[in-house]
Image (cartoon, rainbow, N blue to C red; front, side, top):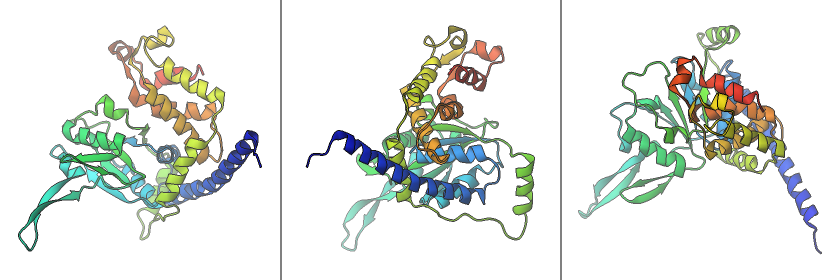
Length: 335
């Protein structure tokens, strides 16, 4: 019996809807579990979840003491990921992260090399204060973030899947740091700015974390569940208006392509990877919000964290008091 293309398309859509409905329950459970440990910071938690569900890496920027490390640890526990943490310092070498080969001698006196895996062989790597590492170490991490494998002594070693890097960075203390190169910044799906909690959230933090007992996270998903969510994100439908909105926004942020009155202040703008990241992030945010298709609201909500680290202003713009956040806000207002 021949099956029409329309029937196949309908069956595929029905399968996506069923998978999405199951995924929505898992995501809701994950958000609830995280909220028992991380108080307030709803936007930060949402953006971190979106980053992982979209299959990307995240850069968390904020002053010390805002629970960035706690958030990453909680995400690893709740999502059932094998997590490792590396404290980045100027003397950290690539081998300290990637691993190295050591020579062993057996009982017969024969010598051979054995590869000892470094902490990067985890499903969730926390790179604490990543900008304190030397450029050499940063470049070693760059290959892993982009290609999902490392090369040691000419041998390829694949990383676990899923594999994510959530890095932290202190925006204030710059002494003894090495600014991340543009190529590595572009590998982060989003820059997540972590601000101070509001009064109600800080009050809850004060009361619930200084007593005898405090909230603990529990796993509500597995690595396989997260991988399934990531596959689902790529299958979710996207309306033509959203596609055009992403293209309009990203292209308008490039010198020479958008409004000259605004782009004259932009030294360099986002490339095609930014548009790809915004598309995936918008679909993931829809899923986190309980919807099966992204809207222009998702694009606007994620424009700044996706574009901010992929752009730079001219000296004239900084002299005039302009900021990247302000420029992106103007770009969003024209969608």
